[in-house]
Image (cartoon, rainbow, N blue to C red; front, top):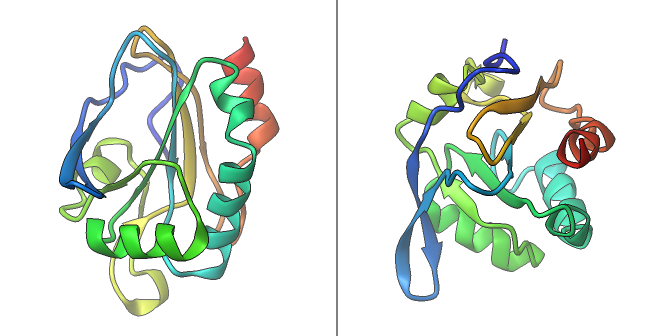
Length: 154
């Protein structure tokens, strides 16, 4: 069960691979943020989700929001996946699984390979409070993106 709406969102600093090397990705207050947790790069549902969100990124930025994808993949695997699929959303590596634990979205033993992030979506308000929280029933299910946009608009 993900952290509850109305909770203060756990802060984090994760690594992301950029053209200039590794960069910090942080939850920044003062601007709404959509956090999209996903199990693993290079998997079919995750690729479809992030290609679709990339294609419709303006729907989120027009509402003044940042969008960050978070998985337990290394930043180097995330970079290769993003390049291979033209994903432009910042991807943050939670290799140590601290953020997925803080947001309570751990998917235990996915396909027998180990703990990963569950597929989940959060809208964090500019005030740092969780406005929307959803963990999908299975990793194959996508979040309700219309509800995510409604939470941003509201």
